[in-house]
Image (cartoon, rainbow, N blue to C red; front, side, top):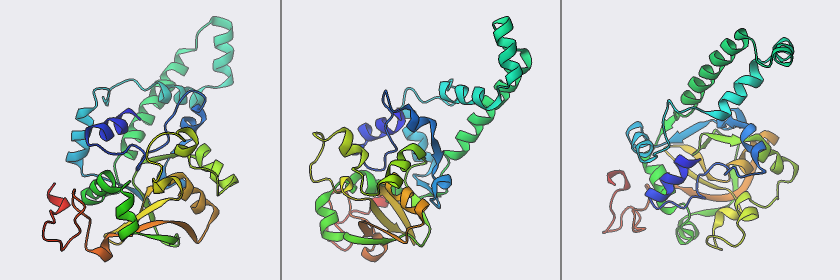
Amino acid sequence: MSLLWKKAAAFQIDPRQGMAWHVEPGEENYARSAKHVRDAGFAGHVDHDADTRAEYAGMDEDHDEDKFDEDLYDQAHENVVQSRDQRHYDEHGEFPQSYDDRKDDEYYRLKDQKAREDEPDHEDNALMNFVGNHGTNTAHWHQHGEYGAVNLQQPVYATQSHVSQAHIDKYLHDPNAMSHHRTKYQNAGNSDYLGDGAPMFVTHQGRLHTTEGHHRTAAALQRGDSHIMGWHYDADKHGGFPDEDGNMPGHPDYYDPNEW
């Protein structure tokens, strides 16, 4: 999660907006059940263009495609270990060479798969800039958004690449469960943040995107719900997105977000 948090800090983005779960001690099951949003019910993943993503990655001193991934290495072990490997370990204190070879092959397969999954299905800088600059702007959402039943009988895209099935299961069990952020940080952030109370959505270029509440939305998709109550901003209806100062398209001081 460090890359996402560094993005938030560098661009003054509220880290609650468009974030995946934040794994802390005692919540490792969230990471173990991570899956790509397409495997959780979403139509795909939308993000910045390749140049902007590379810029973000360059800001993260810990980001290195060749860096050892302990979680994937552990997963590779679970995927390939066999009973005869364990018997060999119990007898000799080490795994056989055949196991090591299979584990290494599986580890690099998983790394390649993860790299592919990080590639978005669509690139939309204007949308992602809006998420970063106005996703938590309660005044904007009250003025230009709507609260009501959001139609899920259409492709729904995510603005993050992965979700946790263990986290989704909480909302499958109780659709009205308190948001993860509010549960963990009840005394932090803006008390009027709309995403704590309901998922948030943006329509742009004909696509419906979840910008907050990915796990709540995924639970609704997995249940086969026809709709979910949430906040919705239709950028297509409004002619686009507000600029950094909150001016809407058509305002004399409007500055096109695509030129930021």
